[in-house]
Length: 494
Image (cartoon, rainbow, N blue to C red; front, side):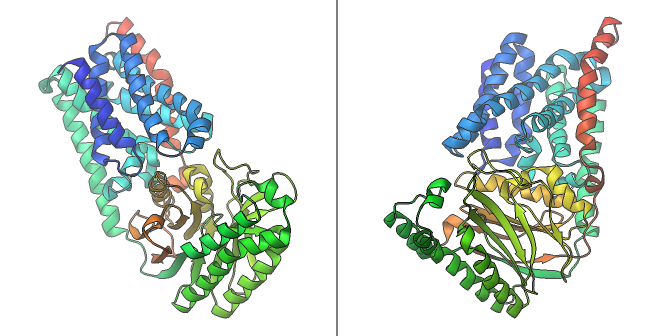
């Protein structure tokens, strides 16, 4: 096959693998094969240039469908990701032939190392991890309970490396390597299937309802804001306007959410979750809202996770909050979002995941983008969390990606997770990654997600105890790989 055709096939499959709303998981297994083959057939400089271009096209394509603001703020970081990913293909080209029987491991080790290094350098969470494309592959997904998402990246990249090596050298020469790989891959799937079968979550469940305001409430609030000439996303402008008029404009949404909270409690929900920042509250009105919801929670005997944008009189004028109200009508936690997205002009919270005991097990919370950060989510595992609540707010073209990443966090840490998103996909996931509830904001007039999630006792995982040890090992091996392969080549060992 001609190098140019290899490049085009690899790039086309890459675009299918990375798109957030209609990605094809199989493409993530296949596209590296063609790019690896291409990189071995052309001069090194051309390989670096064209493989890097392919990966950058993939990043820009993904960014292009997630919003211009995110493109502008994240472009340099994702150029870095493309560079780090290109390094893995370059390492395969330059080092694999000198690595002897371990030659097929050079690409997966360096790819995992590049992905993990990206998270350490940029603070963009685990974005770009190839393994995150496999959230629907339940047997393989269980690998995350040991290695995190990076173990899945390793599996996919190793498969591509073995196929490419067999393609390049002929299958008789790599028969033993291919057999070892097939056995390991088979064990991964068998172990994942056994975990699903024999370590199933408890049958003790709790009913959770995620609610969002109706389109009519949204429109009433927007029309009121337009009449007084205030844009809600301009926090300074909101703070400077007449508070009575602004409070009245925000009221239709909060009123609607309070009403729907009562309705879901009457329908049997024990926990009700509001979506991130869809409700907007002035600082002067916050206590009244919490007292009102507290009275509803006490009367119904439920927990309510309020999430709202709090407008303050001091810079940065807005806080992104999640507040848990208990069945006693009291506030159990007030949590500020730890990782605002690049378009959120707000001060990050302190980065401590709050927990609260309940009759349904220990509860914890983060907000939306926070769930893209495995280290933050692992705090809840250390605190023996049974159920993670994640209020969220997305936009078209992005909600699927966030929902998929949240699935990994549930499997990594062994707790059930309820992610309720406005302007995106809401999901209820058990500790093994089963989707027990799903709702798409854009396909309904008023989004409500109700699910019965297993709780107490939680499943303890290896990853929850040791964290990113696997990724650190790959990073260490990738660092010494060039020196080791150089010495083998210099001494004439093949």
